[in-house]
Image 1 (spheres, rainbow, N blue to C red):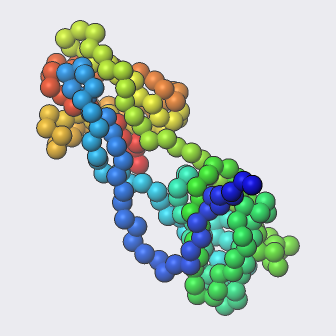
Image 2 (image 1 turned 120 degrees about the vertical axis):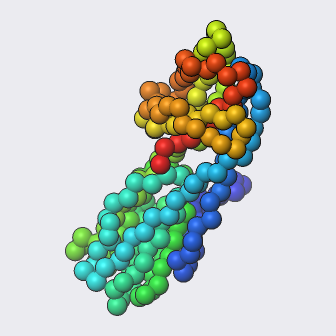
Length: 203
């Protein structure tokens, strides 16, 4: 017997402030991999869909990332059901004046509808993509003024390269759009032999 795993977490919620989480990033010093340290990271995001009195989901299309939350808020006087077209989650009802949320923990396309009002266009779609947090590896100092390393991330994502002398004050030195999931970066002005590096996803 195989145990089934539900990729969604369902809650009825009052809108609340989201607490940021931390991710781990590499620090490089003097051409050597120094180790891991925690740095602030925005983490999962929350997206909102309004159920309007015009029998519509607004917006009717969302593009989110794995781990993000979608919250439906019902502004209509009637209750409305949110049903996955593919059976990805169990149908649920959003009562008038209340909200309900799903956490999307896998990538894919997730069309949905209110079955009663779908013939009038009450449908929606959520596209979920997997975006990996950046990591740094393979440090190399080919000469006294250059420092190279490999960044593993997501092709097309914008990354900010930062340096620090004390792991407290960080300065952005470059912004790159990843040409591939794995790519090399070279700092051609790396004359400081005790400099730390980290890579952040751009907002």
